[in-house]
Image (cartoon, helix red, strand yellow):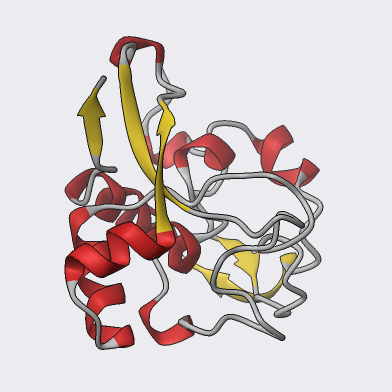
Length: 152
């Protein structure tokens, strides 16, 4: 079993967002939301929590086999697959969901150096060096703020 010190990112990883918006546009995908994400969006947009849910969110079948028969909350997409909040850039940047704030420091990306190195994001491997502690704080934050799930 890999220990904390054996993680491929033990010496940190370089990443700086270039604001190219490739992760926000042109391809179908999901931006999963936690309770904290909904509160942050509601505050940032100065709207009621229920209005955020009705106007900007959708329930999608879970991608986690252990949660079969349930749905996870995600942001809607426009018909061209752009994020619902993308308009010449992120219109909710200061209130963006945790998934957006912590990219690319996700479990699914950090499970293998090959996945990390295979990311097509131009900011990966360049710019600011993020420490192991910072990376693990991103992972811990996702565990502390789980994606909202409902049974179907």
